[in-house]
Image: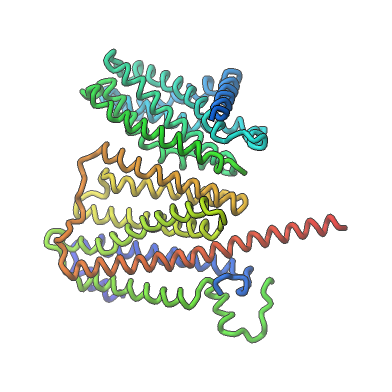
Length: 55
Length: 228
Length: 254
């Protein structure tokens, strides 16, 4: 990934804006998923698996 | 329908009577609105600019005051559970919505008149005889829309904790079309920046559409929003 | 301790704790999304060619356009499931939770869309922001749905929350076109810029298509998990209420 980025940085005009775009999007998704997992685990401690409709 | 209309008149009369006795809008909101107009002058610091943007500043001050007046309008209801009492008594929510909107509209019209005068005095805006009709129609149609959304979102925020900070967040984005439409229409009524009266009338269409959309939507939705 | 864990936990029960909202379907979907995202990054940043006019700025498009699509999709789903909650007689809270989960995902991607759009605008227009009706409407949508999420967090019973927020979501459907058209009328100058159809090469179109498909799957995956978390949150709240009631009854019995 970092190899790809450094390779891209050298070759792309406006590299900071272009790569920044990808970082913003993927980072945003990552943070959301992380936050969601934390709250999921917190709630899961109090909801046993057999009560969850999807299990 | 006739009963909703009767309730609306009763609720409006009640709200206006409360205002006449307490004078909160006259003694507190009006001075606030005028001081906002003075502050705009400090911030913009140029007679030419002020004259150019006077219509926008008037409506911006109206929006800020709207938030305060709406909070007042529902503080009165929530303080002694009056809204709940009305609901329990089986009063149609559409009637309450229309009544509170009407009372709010009357108070806003007074505010707008004072703000317009302060714009004439402070910003050297000029009211032309040719633009009088347009100006009046603008004020009425914009006020109808603002009163409807004010009552709607005020009612929503009144039932909940943290309502004081929530109301502007909900209300101001919805009010944006009114700010745009009323400002453009007022500019052409006053002839700001060489605008002609004819340019203003299409914006009245937008304001009217907005008022009708939220008048109908509000009558339908108000019950679900305040029902606890 | 609500869960009496046996000494030897089976793998399935351990994964039920570590990944409580995951099922075989969601894991499969998640894998596909991950593969799609990697493909998109490789295609978008490395494999696909520069645009003749836009140069490398076109690479932003492959991820900006799918983000915008996802955000608008999310709000359409919020509106539809809010209507489903209000107008179906079952008044199922499942619709409400889908609406809420979808709005959260929508807010995230609306914000992402605005940021990536500004970066793109900075390269091609030389400015982060223009008062274009599409941009402005997007910004208003973001603020409106931030308000929507705040209203969801106000408290009260689940059905109170559901009814309030469903009405609000439907009012937003009324608001957004009005904002869009008034802004468009206010500043008619910047219409119809950005995407020039028919000028993208096949590889570019394929990259964009990959992005759209991947983000649609990503949306489904995110909402699926998020509404499961919300379901558990509601269960925890109900349980807290039940426990409090039982406590009260015990006190009354003494």
